[in-house]
Length: 182
Image 1 (spheres, rainbow, N blue to C red):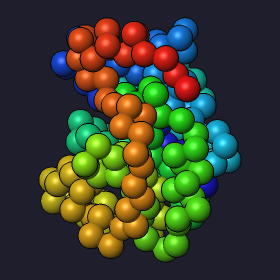
Image 2 (image 1 turned 90 degrees about the horizontal axis):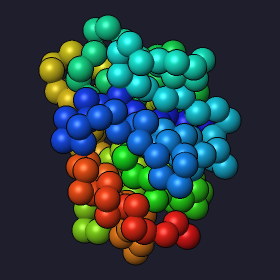
Image 3 (image 1 turned 45 degrees about the vertical axis):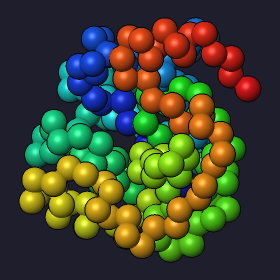
Image 4 (image 1 turned 135 degrees about the vertical axis):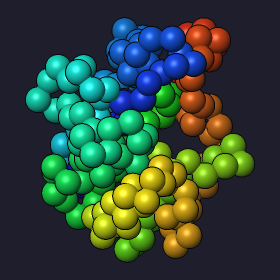
């Protein structure tokens, strides 16, 4: 299984590149990579155009550039062949590895997606390679959302709300800096 860290957003609300923000001296991107280490053979980050600095970072393919997380997922699926992909958005820095370990246990043939705090988290999920053509077709139609592709997904519930908290704004970040990681 290949890990995909989604770090390519524009970070408009955050005000600076979110993937470079740090929590406990570790960047959000690196925290997401570490979260995926126990369940994946390699981890690839999709970063904003012009900001790739390492061999494990990719930029969205030109044809999909600016089309959101779905484009990032497709980019890695095209460049790094595997049967399964574990997706982790970099803006959930409290997310621990056991979330992915549990998703792997629940895996069958369809996508496996986390559910917490009364909502589905399509960017904390496992996707099979077989969904690639469906994702590509959606992008060609100008569709950016992952959710419409989850009608057949296995949903795995988690009680730990804080693990899934997104950091989208400076106030979210300030709140995060006051939290302890378990």
